[in-house]
Image (tube, rainbow, N blue to C red):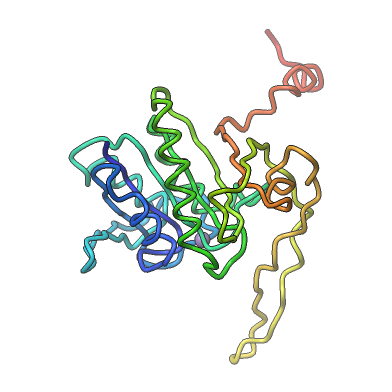
Length: 249
Ligand code: MN
């Protein structure tokens, strides 16, 4: 078993170290993570400049780029083998509902999935690393259970772990993504140089958070596991658009 581990909070993040430690004994582990916090960078790849890879004292490698850069570089040239599994996290904060489109944590796992490798993203629901060791133990237990079923065809799982000491014993729910309300407005300020500057506002509250969603599971102290796909096509609307815009045969 050979495992590639990345994240979006950067190579110094406690969540990364906890996940790596929890995976000890599963096989060979390589860590390749962003040099700096790259939360919210989605699936961005750095195309306008070259990337450098450095090795930290603990053996983790880090890249001056995005989470997707890390996994992309690892899979296309840095590693001299193809990992059996790509893991991402553990993220500092939830990645549920529409967050998954912006998440660098999910993106790192998605990059593995796009290369045909089974991939799992892990996030703690609350920021601040509360009960991180328990979250890492829960992640390990889940990984072992997934491995026991065989890896076979690639999959992409998005896992959100409540910040609780007993998280490994909590029920698990296979969920769909919920939806959020639109984000809060940007926050305008004056810079010291008198320019108007804008801070992206916080994400919106959960809008579709009913039974079966990731929001609902975590709000009810359960571990949420959402199988994701990459195809954004709105298959259901294809016939209506063909009619509306007059597709010719
Ligand atoms: Mn993050």
